[in-house]
Amino acid sequence: MSELAIQPSAQIESSGRVRHAVIGVATAAAVFLLVTGFAGHVFRQGPAQDAPVQAPEITRLQMMTEGAQADILGNGADAAQRNKLIPVSGYSGGAVAPFHAIAPDTSAYDIARKCLTQAIYYEAGNQSVEGKRAVAQVVLNRVRHPAYPHSVCGVVYEGWNGRTCQFTFVCDGSLLRAPVPALWRESEEVAAEALDGQTEQAVGSATNYHADYVLPRWAFTLPKITQLGAHIFYRLPGRWGSAEALTARWDGHEAIPNIDYQGLRERLAAETQEVQPSAPQLVPGLTVTPLISDRHAPDDVGGRIDTTKPWRLSIPLPVSARPTPAVQPAGEDTGKAQGEQS
Image (cartoon, rainbow, N blue to C red; front, side, top):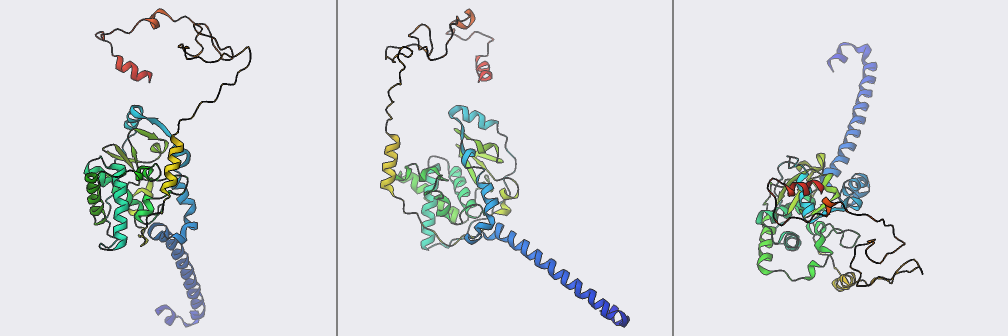
C-alpha cells in the first residue's frame, strides 16, 4: 500500500499486478480447498455419498484381504510354524484415541454393544481378557477407518448378504448356537468398556487379524503388529494403517440385519450332507472296477493294475527300505531332518 502512494504513475500497472496476484491467490486457494476438502472426506468424514470418489483407493485396500488374497495357504501346525516366520513390523500404528462416539443409555448404544459382544464372544470367547479387548479394538478401529462401514453393527455384519463375510461367525452358523452365559457376560463387559473408552494399545490401529492355525495369503501383504492368544493382528500399510487415519465419524445409526436363520440352517445342512461318489466311468478292457479288498497304494504293481494310469516298476533301495528304529540313536537329529524335508 505504501509503495502505491509513493509512485502514483505506476498505480494502475501495480493495481493490475495486484489484481492478477489476488486472482492467482484465490485460484490457488480454491484448488487447495478442493484438494484438502477431498482429503478431508477421505480421512475424516467417510460418508456414504462419497463412496464413488473413494472407490478406487477403498477397493485397493479391500482387495488386500479379499478374493485371491483370502486364499488359505496353510492349516494347523504347518500354518502356526509359517506364521511365526513372518516378522513383526515393530510399529503398532500409534496411540489410538478412546472411542466415545455413542452416548450411553440410548437404543443405539444398546444395539452397538450387542453387535460388539457378538464379535468378541464368537471370535475370542475362549481367549484372555486382553485377547477379547484386542478383537473389540479391531472392530472400533474399522468403525473409524474410511475403508469400512461407520457403525459397530455395520462393521460386524459387513458382507452378511454378499459373497464374503468379514467376520466368519456371521455366516457359518455360529449365531444359531446359544452362547455360554459366563463367557457371554465377560464378552459383554469387555464390549461396554470398549464403547466407554477402553483401548487395547497392544494392537494399536490394527484392522485385521486371523487365527494362528490358518495362514491367509494376505498375511504377507500387511504389517504384522503382534499376537495375542490365538490371534495375529495386522494393520494396513502406510498412513492408511496409522492411528491418524482413524478419524471417520460414527454414522449415528446401529441396526442388526434381519438374517433368514431358517434359510441359513437349510443351507448349512445342505453343505454338510455327505456327497455320494459318482460311479466310475469305465473303459472296457482298460479300467478295473475298484474293490474294497484293494489294499495297495495307487499304481502299485503288487495289486490289480489300472493301465489307464501311469506307473513304473521300481525296487526301493535297501537304505530306504530299512525299518525305522524304535529307539532314537544317539547323535541323530531326526526332528531337524524332518523340518528340513518339510
